[in-house]
Length: 369
Image (cartoon, rainbow, N blue to C red):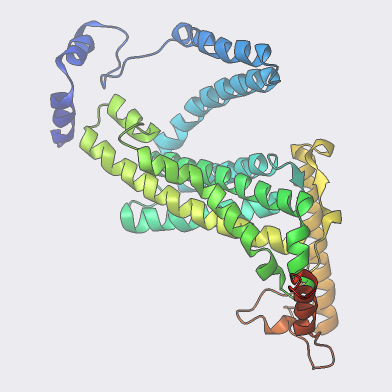
């Protein structure tokens, strides 16, 4: 067996680590210092700072912090146990099942964050995240790292892609629904002047996508100078040479950038399509406040929405004899938007006269007046 990789790792380790490897019972076979649960318990002191500040400033985050800390401990401990047989056996269907579970949980979390929700919110989050993750995972494991669905690489890399896509999607959707629920006047004005739903919502879509991509852009600008990202840190601690760890981190950062862009773009398109119908009317009645539902109810509403959609699709398919009826949920936007233009001149409103009247109303008085 070729041991050059192991020899390179040992040569990279500093003398102190090699000495610990020989004498200390707290160091594993690959030179990593083992952490006990007693040492982890001391981290409660770090969390207590957050609790004290939250209590003194009345931030009302104590419950969220405690629940989050407990969930984080349980989830990461369970993850460490679950990944052992998955990585050991490297059974592709099992790896694929675990990835689907990650996508499902990410969609649930992303759909629970916006202040306002709608029936297909969970479905929008799942499709947006899954589209980005699938596209970038295929690119990564067929071109960049042509190793296939190897559990040791696929699960951590796809996990990081999914987590960042989840955050980007939740921020993007939150900004869109908040604008349509609380600041819809600008969009309604453009719709009243004859703009299509895509033209009227374009400024909201742009600002939402930019907001969703901001954390990723900030991280790319400071990576290597201010912060050492998680994957690179883990590999260095595990004994990987920093140059190799840096290459893997570059793969992660660039793939995360692509997945965040695809997921935010997909989420914006689906959210606008769900809340502004094909007749270009904002359907605020579809929005409801987050306080009225929990995570499970959000998922169930999307399931009911999906079943209703397919039932209507089946009914109209039987009526029209076509498997692609055009108005089950409104037509998709065409590039030239000709579907939304008036069919004849009598139906076409005179927008020029409207604009002239508006200009006359705001025209400043002349000196003679």
